[in-house]
Length: 168
Image (cartoon, rainbow, N blue to C red; front, side):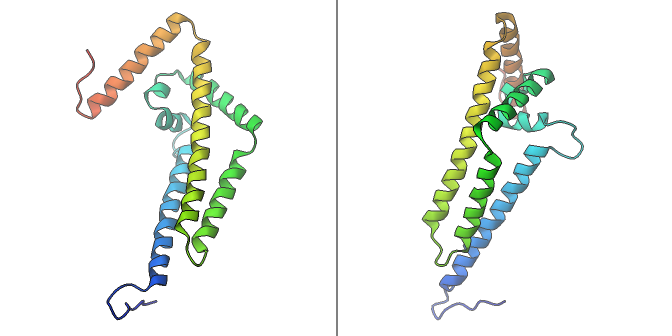
């Protein structure tokens, strides 16, 4: 389909809206693919530890594999008790798609839907932080000190990868 500009050489309004909707949908598809990869891991991985590493950074990478699995189990349990967050995610994306198709396009409505989705992500992040803190509170002083040393080592590794000097 060819869209001809109006007499002033500008894009016609409906074509601009279609372009914005198309770009938004493309961004959402990338987000969905990244979300799937974070949720399910890459094909060669047998566990979700890489996903947790991406989400928690040095705090997660400093945990043992056993601790990561335990925290993951606790998070899944807490999410089940809270309710079906996957249904909320699905409903949010359905609302977003509906808003993208609406004529006339209402950018504020799309922004509100995206804010609601971001709030859900923040709630799940807060849950993970809460579970981690509960886990740390159950550690002995010596275990927590060793964990702090591992966190510092991971931070130093990250800084070294980005050309920063390690903490002395």
